[in-house]
Length: 380
Image 1 (tube, one colour):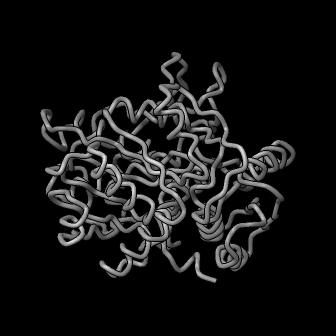
Image 2 (tube, rainbow, N blue to C red):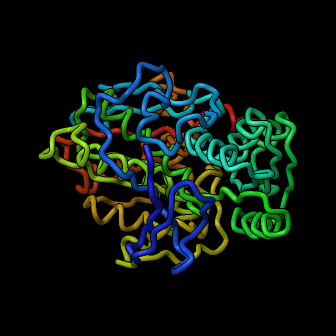
């Protein structure tokens, strides 16, 4: 399989897929991977990991897969919670079951696989927590050097997990935006590959496998709505990209009803929710971001334009949840399902209930809510 890189904004820039890529050199926006030929569903392998979708991923024959067995996470139906919330059917896709305990394993696996194939000296990333654990683990598996920048307020269990993989960890005062600035400076100085969210085209490719799995787990059908807790945006972007590919390639019927993509954010850091409801095409950075759901504490997501386009293309929505609501949603999800929910997953569940209550999500809807990580990473 060969692929081409194209600017995600449609500015017209293209580049060969086998070259090192960061942002579009014409407009400084994210690049996206486009495959040069359709991928038939018969190309799926029997592997029990996301690599069953290898034919639709940016890896060339003979290149090394850096893998820890990520993907194919459970999707649990919760009929009692569906009745309480007021929707017809409700599933939770539990990304906490990934090797590094969050959905970040998917994207960082792909970014590290490309870095290894391109012979780069090392990788670096700013993190609100889970991306740091994932990069640390996959860099160790690949034998690559790694430097990770994290806010000093990141939950201690997450920082401990990062250090356990033997990478360099630098703590910074402030939020993930401040960590991002430090990461960019380090990458420029050393030649390490900066794999920050959507600043390279490969993490989204790993993330999109959540969309493939979701459809396959529903018998190659799609729900009415997907509710995704969103900080940087790559999960939402990736799932929507997968839906487009599956329709284009014939994995699902061409007349299938596309799901509404709905994001949830913390009320104390909701730049995408604010921009969506204001009708903006980009988000203004959030001042003084505060939330205990550290994965949602992303005040200036670089993937803002792409995420907002995704919401509008899908006739989706965006909802903010306050801290009490996040805690209540997290407890409800964990205590009623047995899923070790992270606060981000609790935020998504609470947002779903709020949308039904306000009439923005129909009672007859079938809904998939994403729990993006393990609650164990937040308890200390």
